[in-house]
Image (cartoon, rainbow, N blue to C red):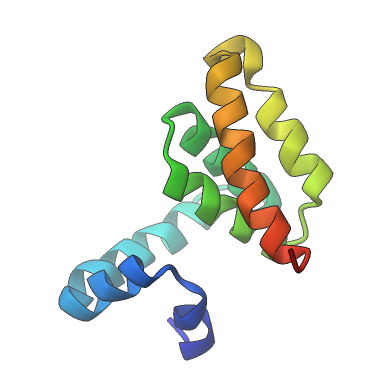
Length: 112
């Protein structure tokens, strides 16, 4: 992980990386391997992972995959659409929670 990437990570992630560097390096390596395991492009992988984070009600995961999706060029509108598309599968309350978490990151990216 580069220092600029490290600085962008949440503080607790950085704490884990400091306390358990081998574990976090292995986790980062798994992430790379998963993204390279098949034909999906980075935008699609990030949207799939965003949807999984939303479905499992992982606020940190939604934050992380929203940031990652934006970084690889996914538009805010596509992020919102990906989350709204989950409504009939995971339910309105879960989608609203995920949208609110995504908006935290979208506002930061927009300078808000």
